[in-house]
Image (cartoon, rainbow, N blue to C red; front, side):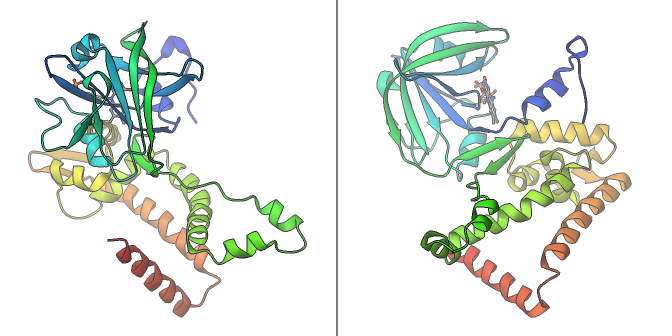
Amino acid sequence: MTHHTDNALDPRAFRRALGNFATGVTVVTAATTEGARVGVTANSFNSVSLDPPLILWSIDKRSGSYSVFEQASHFAINVLAADQIDVSNRFARPSEDKFAGIEVDIGAGGAPLLADCAARFQCEKYQQVDGGDHWIMIGKVVAFDDLGRAPLVYHQGAYSMVLPYPQTSERVVQSPVISARQERLNHNIYYLLTQALRSYQSSYQPKQLSTGLRVSEARMLLVLDSDACIDQACLLAEMAMPVREIEAAQEALCRKGFISNTDDGHHLTAAGERQANVLRDIAAKQQEQVLAAFPAEEVQILQKLLRGIIASGH
Ligand SMILES: Cc1cc2nc3c(=O)[nH]c(=O)nc-3n(C[C@H](O)[C@H](O)[C@H](O)COP(=O)(O)O)c2cc1C
């Protein structure tokens, strides 16, 4: 744990501490009457009021997209679904036309509405508040779509997924007879998979974080953990992290002496290799511990079934 006081507020440490607050990911869009369209990946979205229906998000005053948001009468919040990492990355980088090759619907005030989101909120501009280096944009919701898809989550600089919280074991233990509901759940593969994963994760994640590495940094060390030197494009494809977080993790790992960058790409230093080994060890020990009670043949069957389930999703 690190303790910081406000007179020593280091912007990087501050941003990292804020990253512990898991959020969804949205792309906020708008258009001018002349047809200029913008979209910005934003995790600063939040609900404000039910009556009137207000929401807010904040935009960096330096954003190249700001002038369109300033002129537009409306904006749209597109809440991204779990499989829209590429959409998040596309709208997180300045570019001439972020919408190239993407089909959109047109919402109130011409704001582009993205397909296959979890939810979409069309908003009329309600109020704009000065928020330091950001503008806080408050919108009044005039229409919305609730598509209910599993959301994309952002935590500690890495994209994550939602797992429903399990029923507490206390409740199960207290009840002398297994309820019909519990019996049904005990045979439901989705329930079993998510609870098994949650149970596995809850003891694994703290061990990984005890190395002092962020989720994003550990992920990067494990991706780089090979003899190969990996270039930036390859890293982007493998990391499931926004570019700026990849850069932040690279910077942190460089500072710690775990990776070094050459013209060809990134590779682990000897210290980085040792740290990656520690991470791999933690993963291997966790697996050993969890599976210790089961015979090897059963573990193989489990692996085979899980691979089969993964393959059936494609
Ligand atoms: C997960 C994530 C969340 C972000 N949240 C915000 C945000 O809330 N506000 C903001 O101004 N920029 C945010 N950004 C950065 C912008 O997406 C990025 O600076 C912007 O799209 C750059 O393009 P522009 O200069 O064309 O606007 C976020 C980026 C990522 C990857």
